[in-house]
Image 1 (cartoon, rainbow, N blue to C red):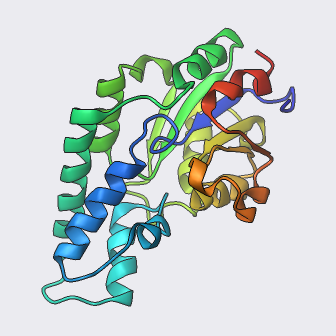
Image 2 (tube, rainbow, N blue to C red; image 1 turned 180 degrees about the vertical axis):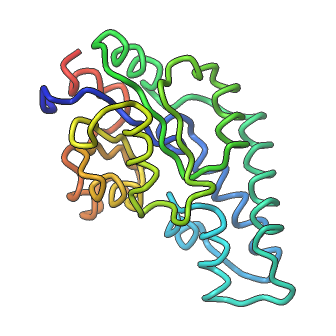
Length: 219
């Protein structure tokens, strides 16, 4: 069980609230491979949790392509992700139960994501969960996205809760680094095919799915 001093739960979005990581992977492979790259799913997973402009820059630095336009490439990827969310978006297992449990416990609920405001709006609308959140923060316009902690620190400020009294729920290694750097407690809920990787040891807790979060919180 987590510390009784926890007063807020801050959720990542992609891969935690909604099963959008496959959509991101498909979109990134489609658009970036259309630029002449030949990225595999495993390679695309390396940038999970990073802001999309950083993802595009990351791959351009490794495999430069002609007529590079970061903003245009990022926009194409975002458009494809939104289309997939609108068509196929589903909440992750146990998410609604976890949000309800946080409310019952009187915990503040935050959202801290690297995704853009357009994708946040698409997810909250598709899942009809916007009313649960007391603060929503995107790294979209920050100098640095995850693994930099700023988006988590901003969310804690928006909630009016000290970072040390927040617990962050993450599915990505980059997100966990950001939350740990913000001095928050952390819960990793990685994708099943990566769950046995040793890197998740940096999280304070690891769960198989969000349905197990209420018990961890003491609900």
